[in-house]
Image (tube, rainbow, N blue to C red; front, side):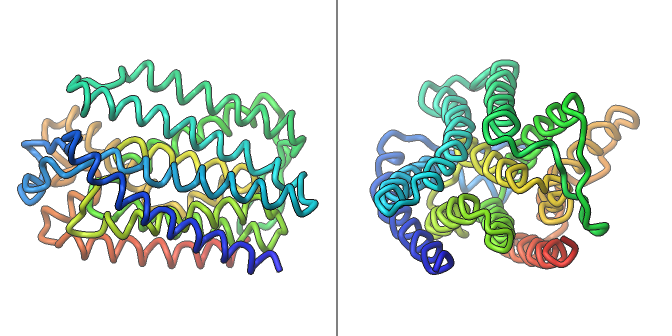
Length: 328
């Protein structure tokens, strides 16, 4: 019965996102909230200059509307406890989305090229991360157990280790998804697959607040993807990428499976590692290890078309998610 409900909210969320996209994209165009491309980036990206961004608003609004509707429906059908558990996950994602929105707004609307200062952005992300982790540990009392894939056992970490670890997971995931967002449809495709994997785990463990919320996110992201596939009519911006990073890490921690992200979210992880390698290698040698970082740009400059990068990275993520489901 729950599976049918999750399918319904996914479809409703998908349709809602498409309707919102048809409304919001023309508004972003009118406001001239356009993409700013790097001069030193792939030359094929220069034609994207001016494409509306901040499209993450579409995903967030769709999530808010459908989660609100779901909350009301569950509350009216004697599922008040389940309804209440969905809201904090939504607040986490809205919080990260809001920080991304402020950054995008300053850069694209107020024409402040620096956007939100990195220190302010990190403080904001840190505050929300701490609040969410504290809620999980002390509000939901889920404990500090963390599932170790492959060996299929739980380890109970001391509180002074678990809380910093969980915060690092959230901050790392938001940064990784942010770096993955650089090609039409890449971040949204990869994240939709990862969140689907987490939804399946939620269903199998009967953690329905996770599977229901994840289904809503999947629908919203797929609806957004209809406008984000190549050639993209809109980009998600930091508004969407930070929010999706929050979703992935938040759900993984809720399921007590943050370590599984090293497998199912390996593509965003590798995107992050590629940037780190590039920076360290350049500082030591004055040369570039990759043709360009993050990793997807290296493949672009190696002759891959955008669609090929998206398809390959998505298929790799799909296989990794299948492996992830196998080893838990």
